[in-house]
Image 1 (cartoon, rainbow, N blue to C red):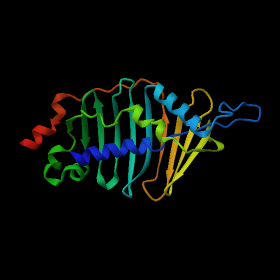
Image 2: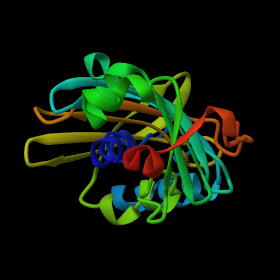
Image 3: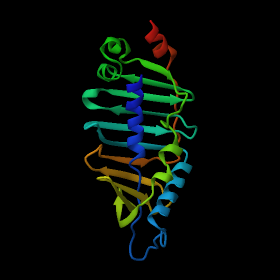
Image 4: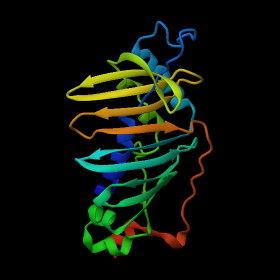
Length: 231
C-alpha cells in the first residue's frame, strides 16, 4: 500500500505546496495589507484559511513528469473526500474519516499501486486501511504551514476568478511559487501556482467554511487490505 499512500500524499502535498492570493483595488480603496511584509501577509492567510475549518482544493499539475488532477474537500471535523486522476496511472476516489482511509480506484490505479496480481480484484471496490499516522491527508495545520511561507516578495496585485488578490512570490532552487491572497473579506488563499522543471501545478482554494459531509462507504462495498493481502 506504500505506493497507494504515496499517490494520495503527493496529491495533498501538491496542494499544500501551491497556496495563495492577494488583493488589488481601485485607487480609492485602501490596501488591507498596507505596511505588512509579504511573509506577514502569508501568515495572516495561513491563519484565516486554517481557521475556516473546511475548504475545497482543485487543480492539476505533474508528478514525476506525469499529469495529475486532484479535487478534494476537507471538513471541519478533519475528515476529507475527493478524487485524483493520474492519466495512464489510473484514477481513484478517496475518503478519510477518523482513523480509517478508504480508496476506490480503477484497474490502472491498482496496477500502479499494488501490481497486476490484485488489481482486477480491487478495482471499483473501496479498500480500507488504517490512517493511524494521519499523514497530513486532511490536516489543515499541515497544509497551511506558515513556516513554509517564508522569504516571500509581494508583486503587483491581480484578480482571481473576479476577486481582488495580493500576489506573493517565492523563488527557490529553480522553482517559483506564486500565492494569491484575497484582499476583500477574510484573507484566504485563493490560488497557488508553481512553475519550474519539477512538478509544476496550479491549485484553486474555495468554499471556505462550507459544510463537508464525509461518510464511510457501505460495508458490502469495502475490502480490508490486511485481509486481502493475507488471503
